[in-house]
Structures are given as structure tokens and as C-alpha cells.
Amino acid sequence: MPETAIAESPVKAVAEHLVVRNKFDGGPLATLPQCTEAEVRVELIRAAASAPAAAAMPRHERGRILDSAAELLQQRSQDVGELIVAEAGKTIKQARKEVSRAVNTLKLSAAETRRNVGEVVPFDSFAGSENRQGWFTREPLGLIAAITPYNDALNLVAHKLGPAIAGGNTVILKPSQLTPLTAILLVDLLREAGLPSDFVTVVLGDRTVAQTIISSKLVRMVSFTGGFATGRAIAANAGIKRLSMELGGNAPVIVFDDADIPAAVEASVSGSFWAAGQNCIGAQRILVQRPVFETFLEAFVTQTAALKTGDPRNEHTDVGPMISHDSAAEAKRKIDEAVAAGAKLLTGGTLDGPVLTPAVLTGVPRTCEAWSEELFAPVVLIEAFDTAEEAIELANDSEYALQAGVFTKDLNRALQTAKAIDAGGVMINDSSDYRHDAMPFGGSKYGSMGREGVHFAYEEMTQPKVIAIAS
Image (cartoon, rainbow, N blue to C red; front, side):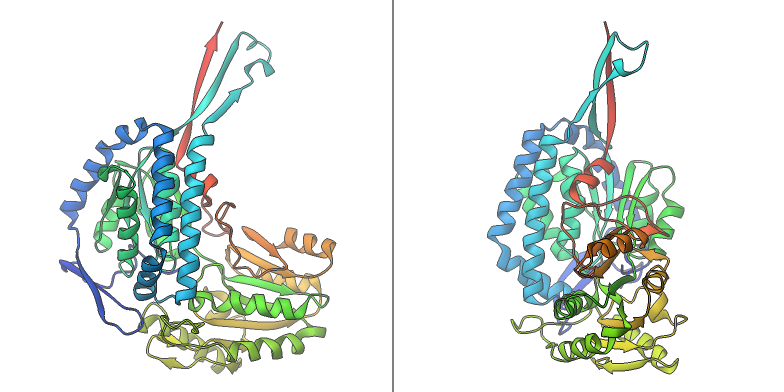
């Protein structure tokens, strides 16, 4: 994931306002006030003081608010999609899909608040406790700090606010400095749906503001999506509180020689270049068994070269701008580094402002950043392998293991490979970038901490409370 919150700030600490710009043409969209450290401390006290009222709100009311907000979002989907295009640089087709997902995320959250209330404890299952009966409930933690990235500026905010509200918590939300308008819009919709204004507080500011939020004893949990450097800083500064962090990946996709190659190519092209590659589960390293390597590679390069890049407002655009000129230039640097080390650039890799044409590399040495680090750009590596054991070794050759993909018609091979890959999720006969908003979502290996997905985030954001009755 991108570096956000603490590690990323496009303004200096002394800045009083944040200028939000169109990611394609650079034009200003809005100028927003930023919080000082003193102001955010006041907001923390206010948000924490509202926690008892949030906990006392009946579940049916929480569910009604979330359902109503989903309906409002659906009604205004065109305007919201256009805002995502301008602020985040997604193509209009991709923005529409993000809006529809966020609607579903809010509906899932509404359902969760009505059903996930706890369960009966079988006290009589242990000798000596036969005269007891009871249950546990799921109770809110209190004030939750939510820190969100730019790449899914609507749905990833919904994935934090929805479960938090469903669980009866209050939230202090710090969205990415690059895409705050979409987050503010979602909070406004929740308030229009009936959420008391003190239950979710939006703050903007530099890394000092973020550190103030994270280190506050008033905060009971930090829910963060972003980069590893920021995740380390949060872990170092948070103190004793619950942490849930989704820190990105370096997704492998394995294509075996018995796979449906046209289907694998189509899914992998989409999985590699969706949202200009700024996708934590996007396919970054595609491993193809040698008998079908050339066939796959030729078809993949052909489809990639045919992708239309440019203005994200255009209905025919497949790949829009990256989040900034600097991000695009950094991705270009990593391409050039790989080529200098012996890799071949088969298509793409040219810069036009913040737009980087989709790039396909092969023969990338494993010492290059393009292999070992998350690129978060429209760049994909395609390499050949001979045996399943070799493919699994290559797939697992990363500290970052969020999701993976496997293409094969052999069910036994698919299941064996999925078991051997060390990742938070393995998609069979699909690219690594598939995600259903109800499924558990999170990484394996380094930096794995907690799970998102509405049901699982709800449980992270609540805690059991046991009631036992002796008779």
C-alpha cells in the first residue's frame, strides 16, 4: 500500500490549509483547513466523550443509519464517481465500481450490527459449572482511530466506518491528504442518514497530527491501511491499544500449463493494471509454466499494449493517472533500474505527466526493487518456471504476502498450491486482485495484523463481555 498518514504529507507542518488537486490535470478542487496539534487534542476529547452515547444507540438505529447511508450513496453514485475520478484519478468505470462496492460495504455493516451480538456459553460443559448459565455480548471498544489511504478513497473508508458504527464505537478519521474530499463526503452522507455529528470526526493534518491521534490514551484501537514505513511508525507510537493494519503486498500469480490461457491472460491484465496498478492486491509477479510461457506472454503483451491511457473521465480510458507525478516518476525509476540490471521491457513504461503507460517486464533479477518490493504502479513482471515446487518458491519469495492467484484446471493441483502459498488469500482461476467485501482480508508474514472484511473488522472493533448466572 502507499505510504500515508505519518509518512506521507504533501504539505509542511506549518501549513494552515491543504489544497486538494485533480490528479490528471493538476487543477485545484478544494482548499481545506488543517488541524493543529492542539486542535486535534480537543477533537480527541470530544470524540471520546461521545463514546458512551454511541454505545447506547440501539442496534436497530445503527443498522437504519447504515442502510440509509447506503441508499443515499446509491442515489448519488454518479456525482460520487465523478469526485473519485477527479480526486483519486481512477477511471470513471473503476470509480463506478468502487461506489457500488462501498454501497455493499455499508449494507453488510448494517446487517452485522443486527446479527453479531454474541452467543450462549455452555457452562455445563465443564464439571462443577452445571449450576451456571450465561452468555457473552459484543461490546464497543470506544474511540477508534481510522487512517485511510488514497487508492480506494471511498470503499476503504467505508470498511472502517461501517463496522465501527455497527459496533457502537466513535471514530476519529484521518484520510489521506491526497484524497480527503471523498472521505468527507461519506461522513456527510452518514450524518444526513442520522448519525450524530460527534460519532465520526474527520481531521486533516501533517504527521504530527497523526502521531497525536495514534499515541493518545483516549484511542482504544488504531485501524490503518497504508505502507509498511507508516505501519512501523504506528506500532512504535501507539502504546498499549489494539492495532489492525493492512500494509500491502507483492502479489504473485501462478499460471500452470493446463490453465485456460485466454482467461488467465484477461484476468491477469485487469489484475495488473486496475487503478493504474495502485492496488495492494494487484498482480505484480506473474509466474507461467514454461510450455505455455511464450503463448501467455505474447497474448499478455498484446492486450496490455492495447489498453488506452489518459484522461480518466473518458469512458474508453483503461488506465488513468497515478496519484502524483512523483509516484509515476518513482515507478519509472524502478523500471529503468530493472532494465539496467538485465530485464527486458516488452511494452509501456513511458511517462506523460502523472500517466505511466502499463509496463511489462521479464527477466527481472530477484535483487531488483521491482521484484522484492511492492511497486504500486502499472508495472508487472512475468517469469517462467518449470516445476510446481519452483513456482511456489518464487511466489513465496517476498516478505509481503497479502493475496495470490493460481490458474489451473486440476483441482488437486490448485488446492495443493493454495495450501503451499504463504498469503492471506489465494484466488483460484482468478487474478490476485479479486476481493469480496464480506470475506476476511489481510496479510500473512511480515506486518500481518488483524483482518478487514465487514464481519471480521466488526469483531476487531468490539470485545466480548461475559454474563454468568449461578443458580
